[in-house]
Amino acid sequence: MSKAKGKPKTPVASTNPTNTVGAWEASLASTLINDDTLNVVIHLLSPEKVEDKLQLQVLGGSVETNVRQKFVYIDKDTLIAQGKEYGKSKDSGSKTGFPEVFALLKGGDDTITSSVLAKLLKVKILDYRDAELERRDEAAQAVLNRNKKVKTKGGKKTSGHASRSPAKSMSPDKGKKDKKGGKKSPTKKPGEGGNVIEADAEIPRGKCPLKKRGEEKEEPAKIEDYPEGGPDLYVLCVGFELPDFLAECHKTNLPITSLIRTSSTEYSSDVAFLDHLTANIGP
Image (tube, rainbow, N blue to C red; front, side):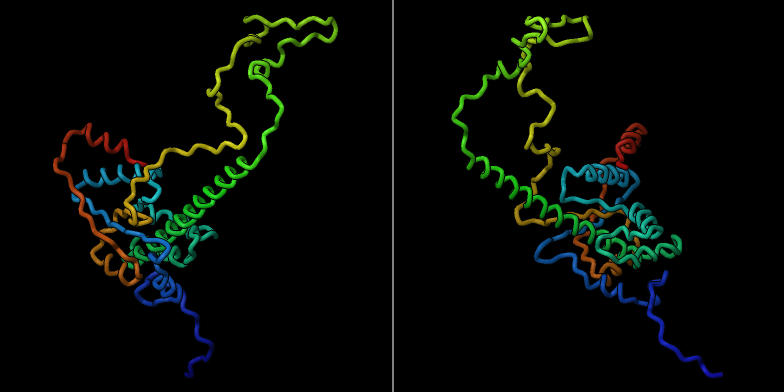
C-alpha cells in the first residue's frame, strides 16, 4: 500500500516536551533575562524542615506588600495554579507571549516535569522584568513632569493687587445682610437644625483631608536601601526542588544565581509559635 502524500504538519507544542522541540521553545530559550538595560538575580530557596517552609511563606507575604519594589516572590504551587487559569482563558496572561507554555499544563500534574516548570518560571520572570522596566520609565516620566511644574510655577508673574485676608475668606457669610429685611441672618445655635459650626469658629489649617489642586497622591513608604550598582530585580523562588530542575533551567537559558538552603538555629515545638507563623502567611 502506498503512503498518502501531503504537506508536512507544523510541529505543535506537546504535553510531553521531551518528544519534540517547537519553534516557540527555541524562541523562549533565545530570549535573554539579563542585558544592558536590566540585571536580574534569581535565587532558589530550599527549606530544610517544615518550620523553615512556614518562615519562607511569611517572607513571601512580606515581599508581596511591595515595600521593596525590586523584590518578587514566586511559589511553585501558585505559579502552576495561575498557569492553569491562563490556559483556560483566551488571554495568555503573559505580556511577553508564549501562550504555548500554559498548554503544557492541561495534561495534569503528572505531566508537569522539570522542563515544563523551567519554561513556566522563565515566562513569569520575563513578565516581572517587563513590569520593572515599565515602572522605571513611569518613575522617570514622573520626575520630568514634576520638574516641568516647578519651572512653570517659577516663570509665572504674581499679581500686584493685595490678596484677600485669610480671616475674610474663611468666613464669607460674615457681614451678609438678608435681602428682605436688611438685617444680618442669625446664626443657628447647636441643637437647632442639627450640628452647626458657628460662623466665627476658625478652621485649623493643615488638617483638611481633601487634596488641593495640583497635589500629588502620597505613595506608601518604600524601602530603597539597595546597593549602588547592584541588581535591578531580585527574584526569590520557592518549591522548585526536583533534582533535574537546574539542568532544565540551563537548557531554557534561565540563569540561576544561587541555590540557598534555609534553616533555623533553633526549632520550637511550641504550638503557639507554629500558629503564629501560619497566621502571618501571606495570601
